[in-house]
Length: 212
Image 1 (cartoon, helix red, strand yellow):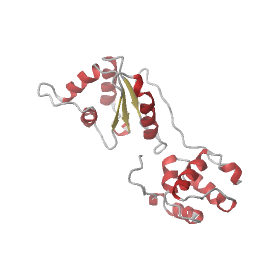
Image 2 (spheres, one colour):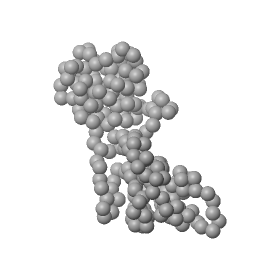
Image 3 (cartoon, one colour):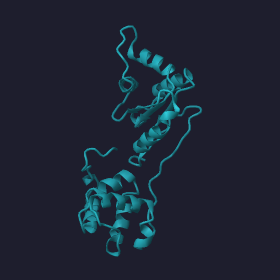
Image 4 (tube, helix red, strand yellow):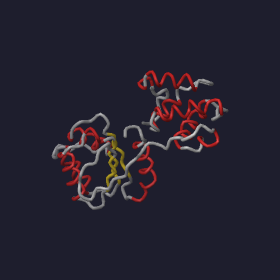
């Protein structure tokens, strides 16, 4: 699924376990990339590799990774998943048992020894009782984000029904729920629901520094 929080989770994992590696952790965004050459350039840039006229970038990166003890996070890899990319990943890991890779993608690589951790949308409410639905993950996330913008706002009998519909309409996808929460105006739960029904594409980020 897109928008279930793969990027945020990978960043948090890297933050928590970076100290377990001699060289820490390195995050590389592959969003928008479409081939291995771009991946190599992005990874080299993230590692701040110095220019070396004796080695091309791929060989230089291979050498650095072969000597590193780190967690390398390759985020949003779905656009570059291919046989060529998989072979490069496999070769990179075989040259250095101390290197660990965390790759987020909407599809697996298909490599031997690959471990999958699937992220699913948040749980959806099954009733409209305010006391019950605010314990459900999707509603709790939406309510938390709205509360950050609108102090004093809370789940109540008068807004429970549209909130349940909003969570279902957005399939419990965290990013969609957060964007929707960013559009809610005081007392405007029903209006927001109607806008969402008219077109999900109207959801746009209103905070420039909110991570994907």
